[in-house]
Length: 457
Image (cartoon, rainbow, N blue to C red):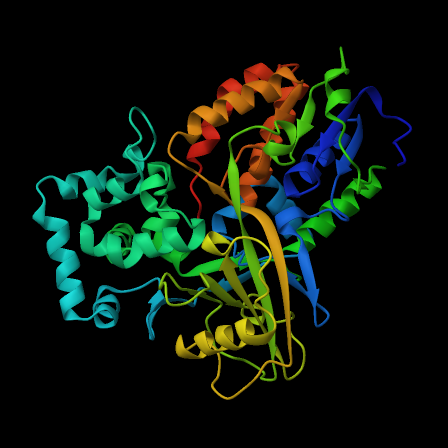
């Protein structure tokens, strides 16, 4: 690794070369610091990397960007050099074999649900005294101030049994693979609440002007999400910093760095504190190349229905038109690890046949047309598993990390479920903290504020 000849002061060590670590390293290099960047994987990128399939840089799952991402300095900088596309949002919520455009309208939701199901949910919502007031306090109440009553009780008390059974429970079981009663109430974030028609109606009722416009569009880099990683790598190379990939991180050496600056740690928190009782669930990604110029117009299908293995399906070219091959289109099918566990193969044999049949029954893939190629990639540590009581374990792990001289930041190290622009913003905060000479202990005392970051979809 080469270093800038004019860089001065103590070396800054950054562990993890996803978007958080790369951006932190770039900010430090621009501040004139000597930087060493370690990454245990074969190449940088993390969850913002790509799977090259049919010559196309396919995202590791759906990474559509909310327009608010352009308010973050890194994304503004990338946008200035290679303008992001502004795309119409044509997402679809799949309810059985019925499709509801997202953002939805109340009539479209009722048509999809049917009169009986819609009436049952409405009656369940208003039947219990105080339920509407509790629903209005959703975001405030899901933060743990006292007893963690659990996801099941928290949601049922606010939307009723019918909505819980139809939307929330299937989604939670599909993603995490444990009984919803064992999940923390903090799982009830806005991303999940939007699978309830009542929450959708409430959101649409609030949406006016710019907020409504943001629901109807998204922004996206024309070369795919991994182009942001490529941009960061290029700027770091100009500063004389290159990630040392495949590099093991010696925990013992961390404790021996007396007098050194804190280690900016953007790896997995469980690697830093191996016995931390914090778990993740991963994601199976099945890439399918269909011999069709286009399969459909939606960019993303959302599928809470438990009859379908997948939670989301995205069509790559509907994110960016350049991400296609002549006469072909690529679908990315996301199957949460959930109850499946590790070591499954959905891209061959009978599992692939079953998956293709489900895509047809869900109205996503064309009937009678087989993909010309299928490939699977398993991505670990995508969804933090927030069990009841997780917050105490998180606090203990963070204190131990600080005692080692590490400053955990970013999605993986902070055990977060967040957007890419949130990762960049937290990285900037972490660098500012270290550059101000503040301690890891001071960082972990304040890092809990990031747990309330909202996932924008």
